[in-house]
Image 1 (spheres, rainbow, N blue to C red):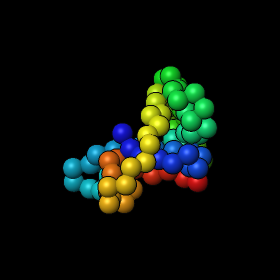
Image 2 (cartoon, rainbow, N blue to C red):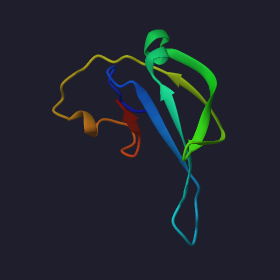
Image 3 (cartoon, helix red, strand yellow):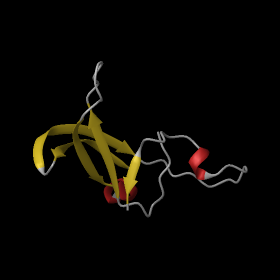
Image 4 (tube, rainbow, N blue to C red):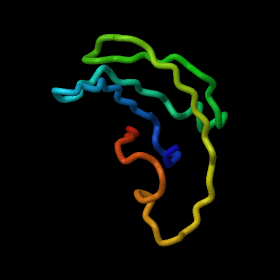
Length: 91
């Protein structure tokens, strides 16, 4: 679960392997348009293309649910509320 504003158009997921003796490697990336999520508040499990360096290298099933929250000020910045700092979204 993570916070995202309605003006963000895409969610980018980077898939990495886990190496013990060397650096982890990027397996590929998935870009998910968020418009349908904001419109219907839910996207059922959907296959998205995993791409690395412009080449299709697999697929990833993702389902999304949007829970609209009202904003309450408690003195925290948005960066401090929930989510993973490594998650990224593209405008």
